[in-house]
Image 1: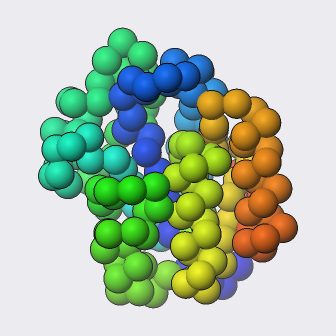
Image 2: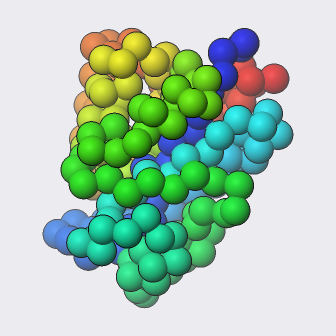
Length: 182
């Protein structure tokens, strides 16, 4: 692969305080290891890792503030492993897509990125809408199927099918995608 990629980590700093939130948190725990493995490979390639997250009505792109606000008994184990580091970019988003109302498109352009790898939650909402907007902006799209989670497995499967067939996303598992990077 010769194109420069960015790893998008969507809504992983999450309080899970909504209907079916605890169920989503259980599925989310399963995607933490593949996302962290991808993140490590992106560091090795010196490619950008970009967190795009809900702002929780705080409206500040302050990692510590949002992390503190979102941390509770359900979310703490996930946030502890997934919180952004000093190498990572961090943007807040007002709606479902990581592109809508954010500087993401401009940042990707400035970083000479031509491909995005979408990971995070919820696969059938924020990951899906972000993939749609990436497609409309003519980015190559990768959605490692073991690196997104939704409230129901069937929602995740349907979103993956739509992203693969309609948005032309590559949905191979993260370990196969990492082999592509090598």
